[in-house]
Image (tube, rainbow, N blue to C red):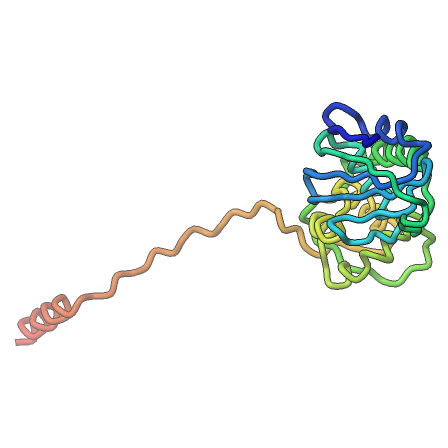
Length: 221
């Protein structure tokens, strides 16, 4: 039997609970940040993911997509059975554990550091080399985002390019800054008072020049 529905009616955690003993592909459409997202599921394990037909091979990026799906109430889904050998085999993540633990932890941290998170438009670049140790998810993000940060990028730019949750990217940049990996270089959205426009001095016309010359000749005579 085909299982289908909408995230407006069924939260992601409930959908995954219904599929915990099934093997196949759970496809989401009509999402906000992508047209199509496939979860390759093997009895409660996420073993692969495609986003707009692109394979997501990094587990940290896959977790980020899971968190985003869990927090949204927009998107239709349909589950189709597949043989185990037909699924992607990029990782083996317990989806229920990742959502119940990871998402809650990430959201708690985002709320905890909300006042310290950088503006989404603040541009960061790579700082001086450091030997500080990073937690696994943050280290995976750093390896992926380092190229963008070398060329200078903002949280909103990284989130759009890497298709990650903006709040999570802001938290990651905050942690990387504290650890000494990045530093801000430009605040795009700083409020600046534009200088008053300079008033152009009108140039004298040809007629006014002639009248001035005649006046000068009369005074001279």
